[in-house]
Amino acid sequence: MMTRSTMPFHITSFILLSLFSLFSGNLHADPIKYEEVTSSDKPTTDDWIYLSVILGSLDTQSQAVITNPDTGEQAYADVPSMPFGGIQAQIPMAHQWLEYGFETGANISWKNDSFVFVATNNQATLALKNQLFLMEVHGGVFVALAPTSRFRLYAGTGPLFAYGHINNSDEQPENLPSTQNANISVNLGKSSNDTAFGVYGRAGVEYFTRSGFSFGAGVRRAKYDMDFGDVAGKIAFNDNLYFISLGQRFKIY
Image 1 (spheres, rainbow, N blue to C red):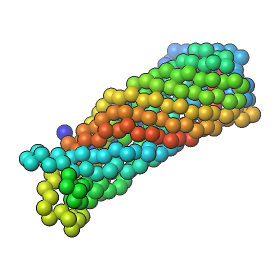
Image 2 (cartoon, one colour):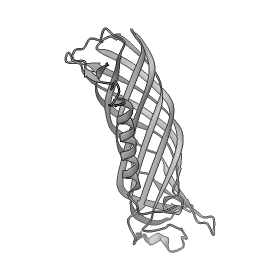
Image 3 (cartoon, one colour):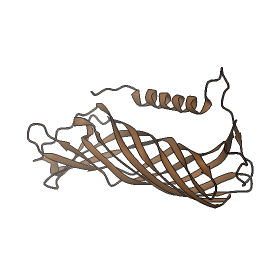
Image 4 (cartoon, helix red, strand yellow):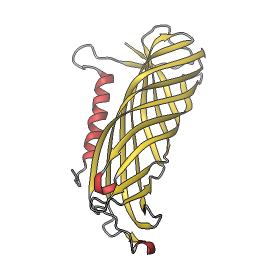
């Protein structure tokens, strides 16, 4: 179904509130509290987690593929690279030099750009402006090597749930000179939503300063498919996200 609604913002708010509730617990009965670890040493107790914010770029090689329902003719548009941001939590079950446990988090990505659809005969058909919004919520397992309390290497994997929204804001796209014999069906001035389940994997490195603050870098790959119908067609995401991370350990009590 196609809409002009602000659905992405409502769903984002719902997810953020859900994550906040997950980490905050019930405020009326023994609420969970968190305390920053302000040194590079690991806490002496087992009740602590890693929290971090990630910022990066989705270096996508994906294409939007749209099909004319009458003729079956297809057109392709490259999906541009997109900025990405999110929050991640890792809950270790083992706390020595070998760590393992569970992880969860959420990421969002957005882009205001143009799609240039190209017909199967390699003739450009049209260029139109649109806005693409993606949100992913994931949960899985991780393993890490931490030879010292100030340095760790980690890798994680698991399932994810993705939501996508695209809006064709350009009701009068630019018809390129070579479009005279092309017949591409695109629903202009409309929007479309889709959801999908997929899988992800990520790996990274972190360094902890004397104050307990951490910074790091890593790469993440997620695989899932979106179908935006005659607004933008089908997009198969299976690309690398390169990111930097800023975080800290937190004790739970």
